Length: 171
Image (cartoon, rainbow, N blue to C red; front, top):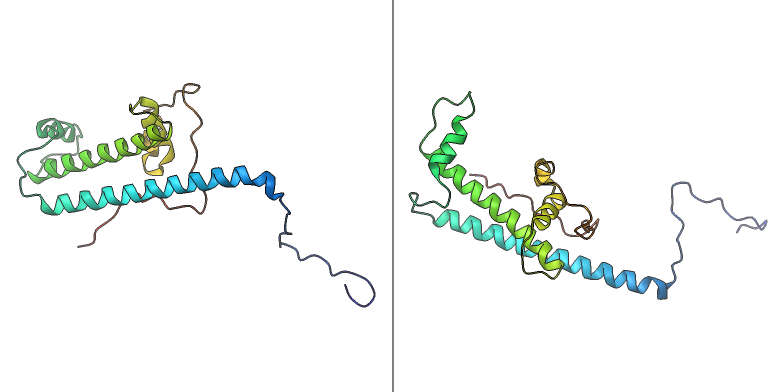
């Protein structure tokens, strides 16, 4: 207030503090803290996952044994009419990339199953992993969510840990 008893006008664009009752906010704060800790733990697990993948790639010396069939991968690559020839290394690298893709999607689906206190991975866990991760947006129409069967999927907390999408290694 100034000398004449008038208060200064509020600053435009500045948010006025909103008083929250602390007793009513306690359950929400505990739930928020639990969700935040859960996201941090998942973030750490994904960092460990990608570090292990990188280490495994660096240590690979056997390029003849694969988990995915190279002939099938070549067939899929040749399905594109623009592809004329395929280098011998291309299906091997593509097979490894597919393995990593499947592993990450499974890992994220498993996190969702554990959040729901289950030890069985279900289709809705994979759908939840796809919904939660921006990189998997291209799969949203391929793996539709089964509404009503699953609980609501919690979204990442703004300002929470950043989702490690992929690590690019410069050479």
